[in-house]
Amino acid sequence: MTQINWSDKVNPVVRNLPPSGIRRFFDLVSEMKGVISLGVGEPDFVTPWHIREACIYSLEKGYTMYTSNWGLLELREAVAADVEGTYNIKYNPRDEILITVGVSEAMDLAMRVLLEPGDEVLIPEPSYVSYAPCTTLAGGVPVFIPTGMENGFRISAEQVQSLITPRTKVLLLCYPNNPTGAVMDREELLKIAEVAKQNDLMVVSDEIYDRLTYVGQHTCMASLPGMRDRTVLLNGFSKAYAMTGWRVGYAAGHPDIIGAMTKIHQYTMLCTSITAQMAAMEALKNGQPAMRHMVENYNRRRNLVVQAFRDMGLPCYEPGGAFYAFPQISATGLNCEEFAEELLKQEQVALVPGNAFGPSGEGFVRVSYAASLDDLSEAFRRIGRFVRRYGVRPKIISTPVQMANGQSA
Amino acid sequence: MGNITRQILDLLRENAKLTPEEIAVMLNIDVIEVRDLIKDLEDKKTILSYQTMINWGKVGREKVIALIEVRITPQRDVGFDAIAERIYRFPEVRSMHLMSGTYDLAIFVEGSSMKEIAHFVSTKLATIEGVVSTASYFVLKTYKQNGVILEDNEEDRRLMVSP
Ligand SMILES: Cc1ncc(COP(=O)(O)O)c(C=O)c1O
Image 1 (tube, rainbow over the protein chains, first blue to last red):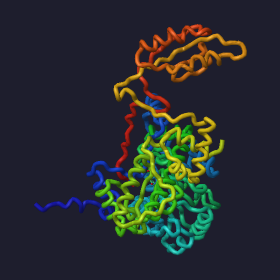
Image 2 (image 1 turned 180 degrees about the horizontal axis):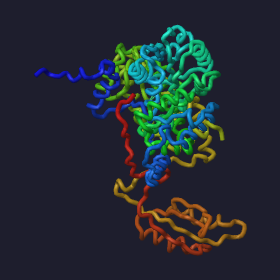
Image 3 (image 1 turned 60 degrees about the horizontal axis):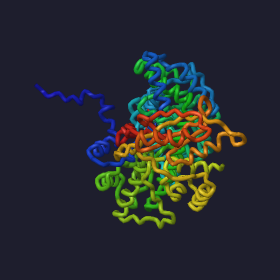
């Protein structure tokens, strides 16, 4: 009998999808002991207690059933009020907002709804690992917009314009950015919006880090003139409210687009877990003080991280949002994967090689400062020792940063 | 109070070991300004002291703590304050508050044994002129103090690396 090659059964589109660059590194890390991880893409805070407690209460009350495909109307109303209050954009909670299983599902739905085979999606790079695979799986073709430290990892309207072809259908935006922490200026976004309008592009805007903006004010793409219906706005609860494991997010946009997304969602997902929706409702209702507290904490650590890398002698662009720093490590003579691997082996500090997020990430590493002050300070000590071993000279420091080993702030 | 002052106080309240250098970097201001502000807060007794929270049970030196509810007779001109001072000056008194409601003073007393506290209440506290009555309640277990949970089992459960 001939041996069956089971992998031949797998759709070639899926078979040929490259594995996430993070995966290999994850396997490496999980074999080691005593590792301090700055490689985590989620808050170090657990979900605020009032949200957890509200969820427990909802379970006690027996909220264990399906909800409307769109999500609980009360939650959609709360989302609409939140978006209007923050960005002054009105969405009708009845047919312009869909509650999804995180931004992850919303991203997949948006791509599946918008793309026809061969349609091109412009994706800034480096950026979050799911964008290109979601595009490919929906039959689209990712076209990358490279960014670099010299322009603060921002894209420009000219860049967008120069990459447009007759097949370009979607412009994907993710600001504040994972992994660089870059934020966009309003002026440039206005110009990009003009390019989108002139070329009839749809914009899918992943604004999951919007509340974690430390420099200036976040500009919501959908709030720009003429962009509301052209934008599929994606946001969620994972980052702002420290609710990654709950899996709840939303998409907002024109009813025809959101309606089409809901059609797929109703057949493939039915609805987002009611328990998570209950918790999300509590987050919007009473979560502002705890969120502000977390944001304030991230901001302070952000300053420490940037300073620490600069003191070590590694250039580090100041990230304006999210909870990542993206220092340049080429001065060590190592490429980003070697750097991450050697640092892990020699000093037991985990971070993510920049090229996991796209080729422009080569020469950089992503450092998550969603970690306690204790862990950050110990990690800096180890990284400092490591880079000195590779001949990087520390900057002459006027005010030495010595972190106390007390409890984290 | 300026915003910077508030932020410095917030930071020190959470972690008194933070150095002025670290605070300066975190708040993106000059270290000299931080030093000056802290000095000023100390001079004006806004910052009263820096203490360490200790879980004494872990070193086998469990303290006995009691809440004493005290009713007192207020005095002309000074109200409750004069009697209050006579009481809070005892080192056994760890914290004390004037309360609304059915009694007047809530006093937390610390000692090495129940006997020691009982002795303090009966011989010192109850005999002060103006003290009408006392009711003592011994603490059986402390779950949380000054915002810190004593046996916190919510360790970091995140994956080591995630996108
Ligand atoms: C830019 C970006 N978008 C989306 C997600 C996933 O979000 P969710 O938890 O809402 O699916 C992440 C998570 O790391 C992210 O960094």
